[in-house]
Length: 373
Image (cartoon, rainbow, N blue to C red; front, side, top):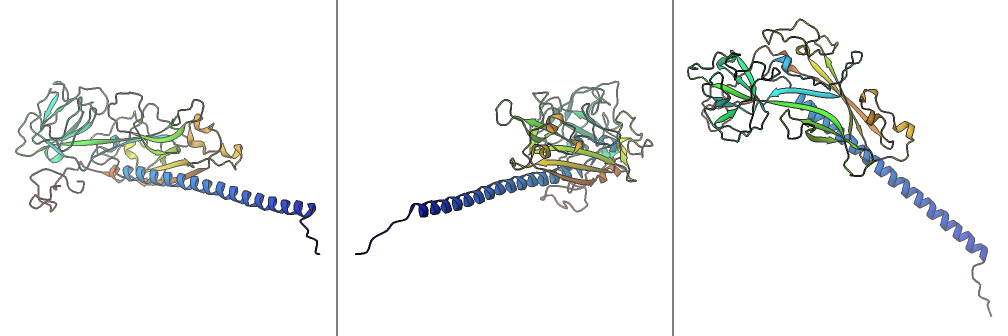
């Protein structure tokens, strides 16, 4: 009779050890793969945010100065940060005329606080909106700011009084102040154009989006529209997440950097070439550098390495942020061709496809603007 045998204790121990080592190796490989997957996903998220942000800023920046005097194209608020040695800023503010908006005003009375429109407003406007009033042939023009919102189709705009700063330096609501020649006079059938001036005010802010006190905030790129907000401390609207730093460098036509001095007097006439090299009207290109962080933390990198960020951040709360994020740097140079404008553009085409000869070089009957000027 054959004796049946089982596994010996040594065989069981060896088998258990082999199984344990195998499971341990598979688990380590799985955890490594998972960490690598999340790390790469975070990097891709940061790269996508950085790429989309740069495309957005560059696309808008190319239009800076369109339809307005070059020295008014860029703004430098009180908290604008600049350094003469590196010519850097962590805030970018510029203006442009909206090429898709055009209203027509009837005769404007000097000293009035209202503007009567010959046709209904093509789009609604918010309180604080800057508008540009251009006489026929762009012989003269001025600016104003709305003191009340206006709805689409309205035939009247409410204008605020002078503030001694742009846009109400030449305040036509004051009977003793500036008045374009086409005001109070018959225009001979030609229109007084009303244009909308858009403001792009980009800044980086840290937001506590998890609602947990003591945890670090998440960086966002915000854009203000230059309109009067209910909350004076509002940042505007978030347009991109995980953008930690921004550096703006202005470049002259000869390639040298320019540190604008906003207090310099404006050139007169406004489209003449300013003599002072640091006048903002001499900006011909803008270098925009952005730093984005990954959308997820990477626990595999040491704290010392993770605290490194390009010195142009200028924000202590970001420089001292906890480690755990990789960072990505991107830089682009944008040529602002509208800064070389020598005359004020006025619309000569139509946006209305039903209008006869629309967009064919014939002065349209609806006074709209086709193709931006």
